[in-house]
Every structure is written in C-alpha cells, then in structure tokens.
Amino acid sequence: MKHILSGIFAAAFALSASAAAQAQDKPPLKIGGILDMSSLYADITGPGSEAAAKMAVDDFGGEVLGRKIQVLAADHLNKADLSANIARDMLDNQGVEMIYDVAASATALAAGEIAKARGKIIMFNGPGSIRLTNEACGPYTIHYVFDTYGQANVTGLAAVKSGLDSWFFLTADYAFGQDLEKDTSAVVTKTGGKVLGAVRHPLNTSDFSSFLLQAQASKAKVIGLANAGGDTVNAIKQAAEFGITKGDQKVSPLLAFVTDIDSIGLETAQGLLLAEAFYWDLNDDTRAFSKRFTERMKRPPTSAQAGVYSSVTHYLKAVKAAGTTDSAAVIKVMKDTPINDFFAKNGKIREDGRMIHDMYLFEVKKPSESKGRWDDYKLLATVPGSEAFQSLEQSRCPLVKK
Image (tube, rainbow, N blue to C red; front, side, top):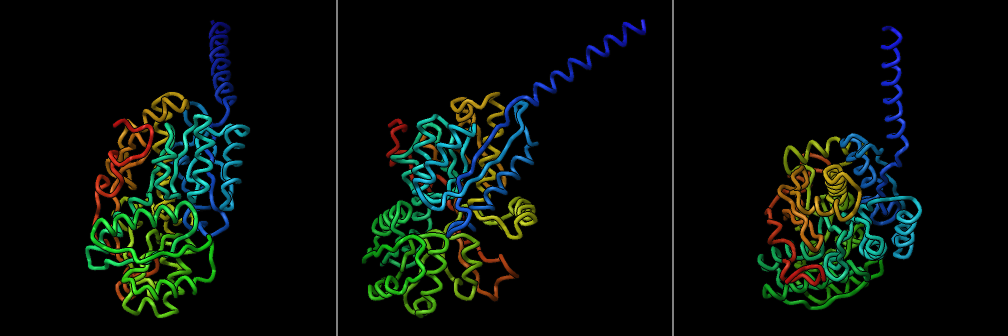
C-alpha cells in the first residue's frame, strides 16, 4: 500500500511540475511604450509613462493567461520615421501585442499606421491630434486621455463666454499644433469671437520673441498657445518677461500639464485657464493613486501618465476576460466594458476609438492660495464627456456608421 501511495503522489507531483513548466514555457505578454524619454515632452510622458505602465502590471498581478507581462519602452526622439520604425520592430520582431502612449501627434500618426496594418491594438495617451479618431482611426486604435477638439472646446468656450473674444495663435508647426489651432478657431468663431491671426513656430523653440511681438501687435485679447510641453513653458515665461501677461492681453495655454505649471511657477502662471483630463488632487481616488506614483517618481502624475495606468489596466482586464490576446476579441471586451477607476467614471470607448470621459476646467491658483508645491489648480467646471468631445455625428472616421 505504501508503494502504491508513494507512486500516486509521485505521479501527481510530476503532473504538477509539468503544468508549471508549461506555464513557464509560455512566452511573455509584451506591451510596448513609444515615448519621448529625453526631449520637450519627457515630463508629460517619458519615464513617468513607463512607470505608470509597470505599476498597472504589478497591481494586476504580473501575469495573465499564464503568461508573465513584460513592459518595454523606447525613445522616439520626436521623429515620426523613428516612431514608425520602433513600432515595426516591436510588432514584427519583439512580439509586442499592444502599444501604449506614443507621445506627440506626428509620431502617433506614424506608429498608428504600422499597428493598423498589423491588426494590433494601439492606445494613445500623450498625443492630442483629433485626426487619430477621425481620418486616421482604426479598428484597434484607442485615443484615451485628451484630444485637440476636447481641449479647444473646454478652454476656448469658457474664454469666449467670459468676454475674451478675439484671438491670435502661436502654433507649433506640426500635426498637433495645427489641429489645436483649427479646433480652437472653430470654437471661437462659432461662439461669436474673432481670430485675428496666427504665426507658426518650429517644434522645440527656445526664442519666442518675434512670435510674441506679432501676437502683441495684433491687439487680440487672447494669445492662444497651440503647443505643448517645453514650448508652452518657454512661451509663457517669455510672455511674462515682455510684460504681456500683466497687460490687457491674456495668454491661454490650450494644452498644459501640472508639470508645465510647476516649471513656470505660480507667480507667472496664476490666473491661467486650462483644460485637463485628470488632476492629482481631485478626490480621494486620484490622491491615493498619485501618492503611490509620487513614491516612485518623486512628483505627481500628469493626465497622460494617469491615463497610461488606466488604459493598460483596462487592456489587461479585457485580455483576461477574452481568454486571448487576439485583437478583435480584446477590443470588443474593451469597448463593451465601462471604465470605472480613479481616472474615469463610466468611461466608454466608442466605435471611432475615442474614450469618452469627463473633462475639467481649471484656473491656476495665486501663490497665496497654494498650500505648497503641486497645489496648483482650482476647479471651475466639470464638463461631461458627451459635451467635451466631438460627437459621432461630426466624426470623419470611416468606421462610424451614419
């Protein structure tokens, strides 16, 4: 009897060991970030987005469907051709199943075409161009955090309604800046305002003096900054040096992040109106996540980085529910399942890939109102996603049925 029992136990152990070995033999599930790790958008996405993706994986348990989850990241140097090459290498050679973030619009449009051709899911957190869910939409493309239409609609509408009804734009001369100027101009004119002109500047500009002088000479009530990251920071700082911010003209950053305001400083940034998809100090949930993020990165997350955590988590939950990494099966679960977490309440991914969620209008605090570093915003309005983002009726995405 002892020999029989020991034989049974040995067989059971062998089967268990075999199953474990097979699970270990499964290839890892790889997700790849294409990020700005070293240039003007590095604070917005960059290492913080990679950290947010790793946090999401850790919180999920580190594996799904018996496969370890591996997070990759690469620096696209803000070059569209390099972004496309990285996407191609990740999907063709490295076995990546999903791409996240892809900071900046030109680089996102390039990587998006590669992912679309290979039938792979790509989720945009840092880029803003509305083209990503219009002409460049795809069946496996998700635009998660913000876009130029939403930014323009929330900020531009509030400004014009408050009497700031004449605009001049300083525009970064690439896809994102052009779309942001176009979308904000449409909101301004539709609401009864006027656009008095615009000037386009190269990406990563250090000297805005000639552009600011043209804007000042226009006598527009608002100088709209259709740029982001280091360009927004430099433009606002130099506008203050020229005395523009203390005069009759208002400077309006059409896309700004809490890291930008921190770089500018409240003394210079106070009173600015801006739209954001997320703020670390909105509620108990945002504060709890941001505390954990800050322990890793020594500062709160931007909306793009918070969106990376949320979108990666949503993707992994969908993989588990679908029982496969097949893009069609996973995207169906992602679109059928509402998103309820610290980033979004009752968020919904539409057929064009746009994730619909609330947007927020903030005013930058005065130094006297702030309790300390990073206490930068006061909430003026919460704008429902159905009002903030482009409607499906307006969509130019070929996938939208009309």
